[in-house]
Length: 90
Image (cartoon, rainbow, N blue to C red; front, side, top):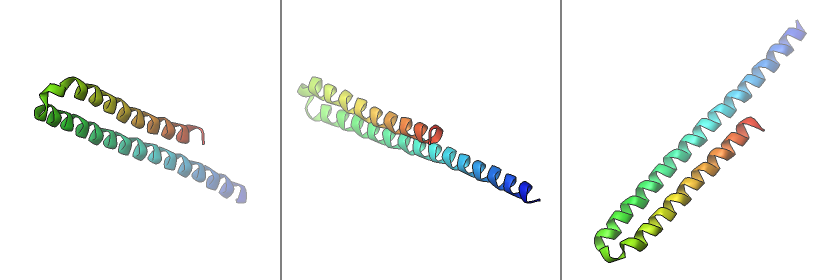
């Protein structure tokens, strides 16, 4: 009886740990995607606003806009990779 109880408790502990990792990965990836979406929306919104205020600087604004977009996406992918590492390696 004791052996069966210890076997069931170890199985449930492993299941709980796996469930926690999956939830953490889902929440972390989801919040990272929301953050990246908000950041990209702000970048492009401010870019449009800047172009309407100073159309002669459109080329410089365009370069800065794409740099901000790339950095925002890179932060999201770093977070996603960190979440995957935490879920599958730890």
